[in-house]
Length: 453
Image 1 (cartoon, rainbow, N blue to C red):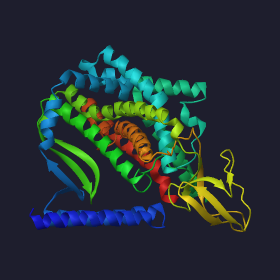
Image 2: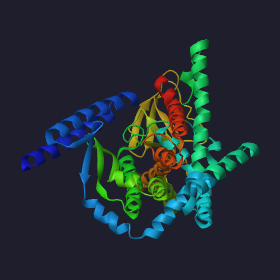
Image 3: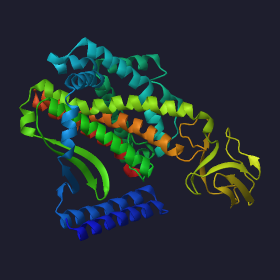
Image 4: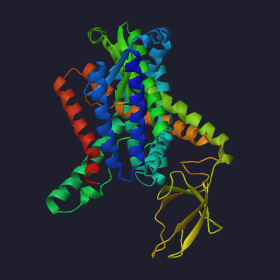
């Protein structure tokens, strides 16, 4: 690439990010923003692929390099530690089923540590990670049920048994299948009884997109950490298995990094002993789940240390500048335990973190904003010191996304690590295909209500 081409490429990247930012500022629905961003990035991808002859797959840009392989090789020298991590992760992922999956590599030492990690993830990390994401994307209110496995002793016993027998694999699979039947029931009521059941059914999942329903810069950085942890662990175990790495690199959608990859010698990997292949595949989800525990500890250490620096007030979500916090209305401090009751057709003086703002109410006493009471104990926090908001959100998203990516990748779905794992460890290919495609069907069902909202 010549100097002129390099300057042009940098200029186009800057323009693309500027357009991306402008799209996010438009006063349109999140779905429309998503469509516009996708359209922009498709155009950018196609331009860069044709102009600079970049490698591509499914319309995505693959930036391949061999520079990262040297670092991976040096890290892979600590063979015992990484094999131990993978074996612990097999227990986290598959519970007692890991005895069947690992066979020769199974040990009670790694199993016991795996069950301890599984308990920490289930009791502490998972509830917080999901509640934090619910707050960030505003899917719905976070209820008290999000802070524990279950208040029903019978259901709690069943869930604990599922975790012990099948780890997160069985636990998450059962949840997806059960909610899939809820969605199927709603579809049936809509089709055969003319109700709007599917439109009022909450989706069992959503797409997490920086700039759309996640903070832009914190979301991109958190996803980058998740990708490096996941793919790096696959790569290290691949080299420990004595399988060559052909390249490593980034996956770009337009100018947005959406993934990382390592490219092993697939033929050599397929001929490798079954236990080593299992370790290679389970390493990615394991690293994400262990990273979730580590960032959970970092998050709460930071939260505890900065407790006295938190803002309180009404955090505005729409109708005013993003991040506005209302401290008082007409000189009266806001009551965080109740909603605002405002006079009708009146002028208001709001004391905010952006200074004094003047607003008016309509005939029903509304001033056209949505807000959230920001207390000292809120999951989402804003701080009085610049930069602390960014650190808090980055730590929270990194722990939450590591957990979600690690847990979801265990599922036996085609193209997921879990799908490859059952292919390797289950000889009956008809059974493998049945499990894989049924899981994919129920997973897609969980997202179906998004089309009707």
